[in-house]
Image (cartoon, rainbow, N blue to C red):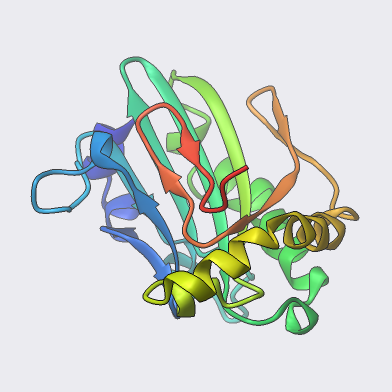
Length: 201
């Protein structure tokens, strides 16, 4: 699948080397990056749906998530669909999140990029749907160990708030895999066959 994306003009045109918006990001671990820190383009593809829809081809562009990450590990494919939000939760419209993920599953995967996500033969090992955010602004405390430790200690309360926020979202199914949107504190880290949450358990 990665080779097809790299060779496909439509998909290659919306490819990127990272996934970050206004300080909120998804990071990549050592199993997917080179010595220079760049992703291994033979194993990872990052697609930006907005770059496809926000063109003159769409008079009214549909809302869509910030990125789709496809990881190839041996013969297995891991897919991550992520919406990145730097705003406090009270300023995030749930209806917008739903509309964006609806676009992915009703248009992007099965119509606009059907030739990749439906027509190709591949083994989808796992599908992850993420709302990546930082409601307590943890990222501002990265260089302040005391403040960072204080915020991480409050992770149980934070997880509760995030879980409550996404509790009303319905699940999505693709290629026989059903998943709910999961809140993740920026930056979750993707490896070749798994991911790690920024907040420790």
